[in-house]
Amino acid sequence: MDGLHFIYFADPMCSWCWGFSPVVEALRERTAEILPIRLVMGGLRPGTTTPMPEDARRNLVGHWREIHELTGQPFGEGLIDLDGFVYDTDPAARAVVLARRTSTDLAIDYLARVQRAFYADGLDVTKNAVLVDLAVELGFDREAFAAGLGDEALKSETWRDYAVSQRAGVTGFPTLVVGPNADGTFAPISRGYQDPNSVLAGVGAWLTAVRSAAE
Image 1 (cartoon, one colour):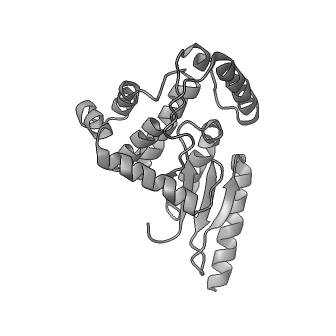
Image 2 (cartoon, rainbow, N blue to C red; image 1 turned 30 degrees about the vertical axis):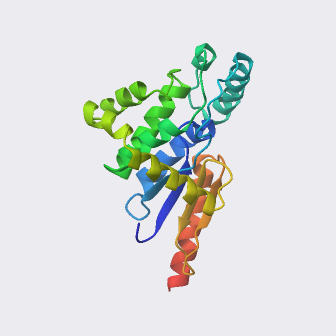
């Protein structure tokens, strides 16, 4: 992506990223014309194969309640009832990357829809059937999206995202950076959750510094 832009490192099964979703929407509403968003999948737990025990699921739901209190985002308790649930984040990340092939805006919309399905609605978004249903809600063709999820090239594309995240030194999600600066680097705006006002203030300060340097 050329020109000034955000890079948003996220994962569709990261609870703090769901909490951060309103921040992303605020950025899209207020800065989209000058600072488009590049979306990169971070790779939270790709390739996990061990089912999550019930006590671990209950503990995680307890953590989600804390995130709800801080962010206001809806969280349900449906995870507790998902017997045999394997917290493999790769299928959902691949689905977001597939949506991104159409457009970044659609990918961000789809990311939020997958997050709501998992966190608020208690759906198992590691299942392709669920991911396809959610894509259809946003206007994607059912058969084409289902076929795309099985594409080996899509898996490679998604794992390249994970590699980009690692090379960038991202150690947690959400992470939002903006740039490039004159020296080609990107400035951190948020490492972890911050509220919309704090993020928008940070973006405003960065833009002021960029404009001053250009004068």
